[in-house]
Length: 220
Image (cartoon, rainbow, N blue to C red):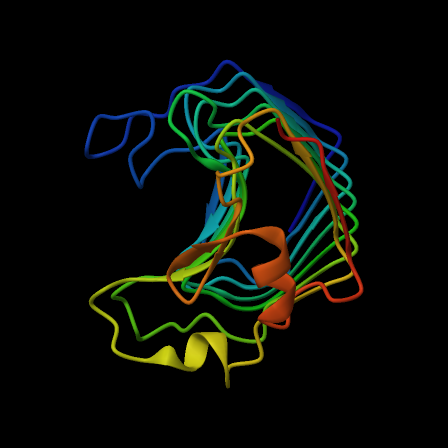
């Protein structure tokens, strides 16, 4: 399946829960697909997530899209395996809800690189929830550019229902060589998430993340 060069905007998908932002909807949502390529699309102003690949999909390429101003998450990869999420502009999504520009949820093998992630409700969040039949592992977030303002964050979290600290230590989840511009906000706000704690930039790097990255702190 190749989805390319479309403008997807101003949609509200009505699913079984009759909510635009329910699990059943999205500006562009694909379930159970193999080797889908989503490229060079303009996905904007949807009353939902922008691009959502879900439910046992395998081998997604989400590359070179412009994902702007959607009410929910910009790019959402959930309970699936292997994705390349690269060279996308992800901007101004999830602002009113505090949703991330990119959300990796209980999914394995996501290679997230060379994206520009600016002005979203949060930056990038990877999370393991209680659905342990799919595990957050082999996540590689590298060479991305993030602008984080207000209370936007980047990092990895694990549900309190999951008693496994290996998501931070042994499951090969890593953040490398990313650039972060910390805009606005106050210096006491911790913009990173790791070990289910909020961390300041120095603690984030001391924990082994982005030691070769760049963090520019412009907070007041």
